[in-house]
Image (cartoon, rainbow, N blue to C red):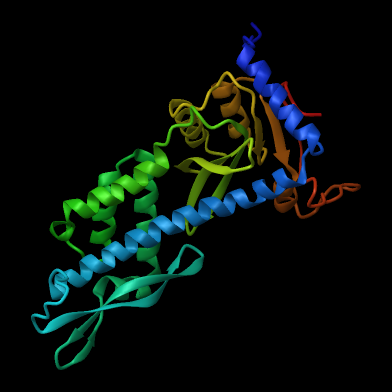
Length: 309
């Protein structure tokens, strides 16, 4: 059986040196990097929730327009009229978030409820379904379909969704998904799977030389899903992340993740396996195993070459 050989380019040697110098200057797995990695998952959550909130607020406005007509500042007309906006709360995945919703009032009967908002408040299944629509749209790049499908879920007809609203929503999703990674000097790539309600989301967060975090990619799927892993890593490559450089990958130990890194980025990459994942999945640790401190939550991976020792 032939051994897989990898051509080590000058760029790969230089980037490997930068990664090692970066780590050695601050300790093997330095505390600042640890803090960045630990907050990477929160960054992904915040971005997804922000997109959801903006999309939902657009849908609430469309739902209000079906009752009161388009907002016309300074021109009160009809039985039901616009009265600014008011705060609301919606459960998204596993946490409640604040949203703004339009305020409507009937000339004689008082407050008028927004149908889309009321449906989401009463039916958790709709919330989960809408999250699924959002993530499928991001994964398949069907950005134009996300807002109309989410709106239909809560009774807003497609004909009520303006082209302008669709384009604004699609542009937001595209900016998350299609950003180029040729220019930023990424040193560390943290890949993790998270759950949002019933949905598994696979994300990659990059840390550059300055310590800034960048969401490199998001896919629907778990770290054990080989197809999802390959889609994510191939997307990073297609969006310009150089494969002839050496990175420090931090992963949860899933075989599909490691195999995907080897296939797309080569077998000479530095790979760290996060021990916090191991401890979390194995509450009964082997005798003599110590739960790592905050300053060293990762240990070197056990397969392949190019590991940090």
